[in-house]
Length: 117
Length: 242
Image 1 (cartoon, rainbow over the protein chains, first blue to last red):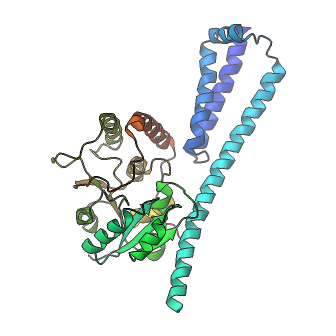
Image 2: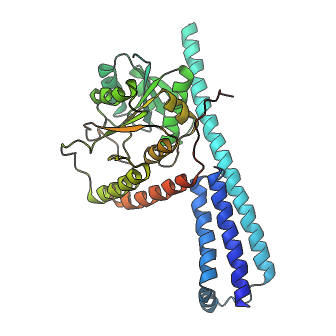
Image 3: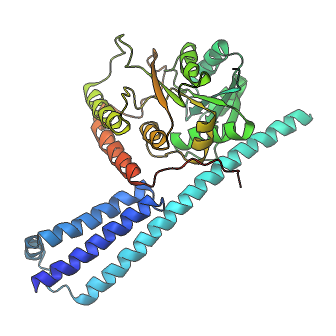
């Protein structure tokens, strides 16, 4: 039983890690947002290779019955959050480009107006 | 070879030192055009720069030094400058040293020249121990990656040539621009050169790296560099602007 959980968690953790790495490689995820995601994936992998840790946490928190439903909804939340991170990365880049263009254009307009006078 | 030179000075709340920096550059490089990129300052930085006769670009809000410097590169690309020199607004970089940075670029020996305060044998002005250790690890790491000795990886005193300006106008790191851009340019196949320069203690303002944060800074930069290495190799193709 514990082996199957380990396998599932391992696959999820590894997929998340690869997905995040690929997003970084393609430049879709800013470094700012990527660190937390890499960390999350690594923690999942730590749990895979060190299942005793789960028991320890269950012991100190008293949370034994983590249902499948919770796990599944958690996974969806993770995916949604990752998508948000990539969207924010994209928006931040566009915002930066806009601000730079705006500032340069403003200078050029002022320059033109000064020449016309 | 005479080329249009643009001196870019990124400035964030530097009203006390900026005037003197602009005057210094004017005195030593009367031919060059000076562009101050005001990174959303809340003081009179922008007005001070205008009073000294520099061209001023005002970013609408504070976006960080990387974005401010890149704005300078974008401006240079639009207005056709073939050589860009970056100088800090806090007065650390003496304008009389700019000629040393420009030299290797005008005779095509390098695409980017970094002014280093360490590669000279003169004793540099005192730097706190924690910061020195952080700098040592960073420069060892970067020198290993690019297989070339760079001593002052965080120096913002640099000159960049024509096609490198084009490249940086499109891609420029925003988090830790000085060390990251070295690795970025190396990976894109540009030639980097370091020359010894003398630097002055800053005229005013505080360093963005306080001694206590030096090690934390180093770890963050190392992580950012490693993530940067993982990215697809930046390719420089001559592309017309959309």
